[in-house]
Amino acid sequence: MSTAGYTGKAPMKVGKRKPPAEPHPGSIRLADGKSLNGTVIQSDYSAQVLTADGKYHLLSREGERYTEKPILPKRDWTTYNGNDSGNRYSTLNQINTKNVGGMSLAWLFPFDASRLETTPVVVDGVMYITGWNEAYALDSTTGQQLWMYRQPHTPGLVSEAGRGTNRGVAIWKDTVFMITDNAHLLALDRLDGRKLWDVEMGSVAAGYSATGAPLVVGDLVVSGVAGGEEGARGFVSAYKASTGERVWRFYSIPNRGEKAAETWIGSALEHGCGATWLTGSYDADLDLIYWTTGNPCPDFNGDERKGDNLYTSSVVALSAKTGELKWHYQFTPHDTHDWDSEQPILLVDQPWHGKPRKLLIHADRNGFFFVLDRVNGELLLAEPFVKATWATGYDRSGRPILTDASESSETGRVICPASSGGTNWYSSSWNPQTNLFYLRANEWCAIYKKQAEPLVDNRWYGGVAPNQSNAESYLRALDIHTGKKVWEMPLSTNNRGGVLSTAGGLVFAGGPGGTFLVLDARTGRDLKHIYVGQDWQASPMTFMVGGKQFVALSGVSGVFVFTLTP
Image (cartoon, rainbow, N blue to C red):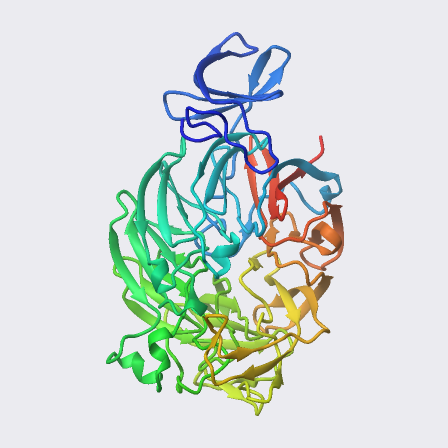
């Protein structure tokens, strides 16, 4: 075994959590008289055995003997968003509108972290989560730690990675992939956490860092990078899952002389930013990867980057095999508001005006809800879902119709939404039962002020944009065919977590006042709220092990897992 607080030395202390017992070779006798031999991890009430065939056996203690918990029936959550479509919808319905009142906390895995944004991944009864340069494997029924990987934090980072942001792992066969704060992509052995390979995606010296969960496409693992305000040139890269060898790279910022560089008039191109830190989506039929890009730099001053500034604040459709750009759509041309487009891309197959269509739906930080044809990037719908004063809508060519308040100014200009956006990176969800799109929506404005000096605290801001004080936050349900609000639930502006919807007719989210919130997916009615005292920063997921459905969400204190009370 690798590190489970276990390195052949004394157990490693992890925050205030008691380290688990050291894994050791052994045998555990079961209540039916049989024995399991392998690597054993024991606690007071449970045990896990990794047998020679590479399988974990999850056990519960009964007196001096143990009973093996069944893994089947199971429903794994195998990627950051649950599946390649990115829609955070689960067909599980064991927890539903009729019995959700009986849901309660099943277990908690404490975490000593300042910004815990990980979404757990569950495969064959084992849960994988990340922290700041840390990865853990847990018994998903109890939270018992199976192994841990950890490496030191990188000093001097000023991006979100420098505060510990990490959103999770990807799985390929028996390999776990994660990124580190200094923009390295790691492959770990899924059974014991040993590091298999390590590649540098971009150097810290060039401004790079990383925060997102990788995406596995076939035998490739795909990742983007952070470091936008540090002047890093954004890119998406694909690596061989078996070796870490780079297969292709797409840059979101062109080089001088390339056609897209004509959209950058001035001197800003060399620090144009366009980070790519949020996990993308994948359409296997089209063999296209869809990835969103960050804002251009300097954020609030566009004087030295006249033009649209491709491919920032956009979605790009890339060939999964080669990384070739097939099409792009820019949500905010020449953005001077820090409105990156690093919000989820959901792939939906639905009739549109009576004809079957492959749709891409996306709520952007700029305050508009978009529906595109994901085959060719054609704009089908653009409607505001919060107050947006910078544009009145989008024209037939897919460009915004700007107002007089569309750019920041030297004296300061009130523009809606605020720079934190009408929504942000946290997950949204589309439910095929209700045909509704669920998201966290923020009603707020800011005073956007540009300045001649592009650097602010050594970051390429080019100005400031303090939020006004009357901010409001909601969980909203939109009709995807019109973009209109169907219902809403007020939320706390302190929370930045996402949403999950299920076939049980439910929507799960971190709620106001430190609650875990469950709503009726059709009406928005509050069906259940559990007080756990958390300001949520992550997005929920659900899984089934041994015929039992669980729902998990990461808070500032750890990973919380809920299920129905027996």
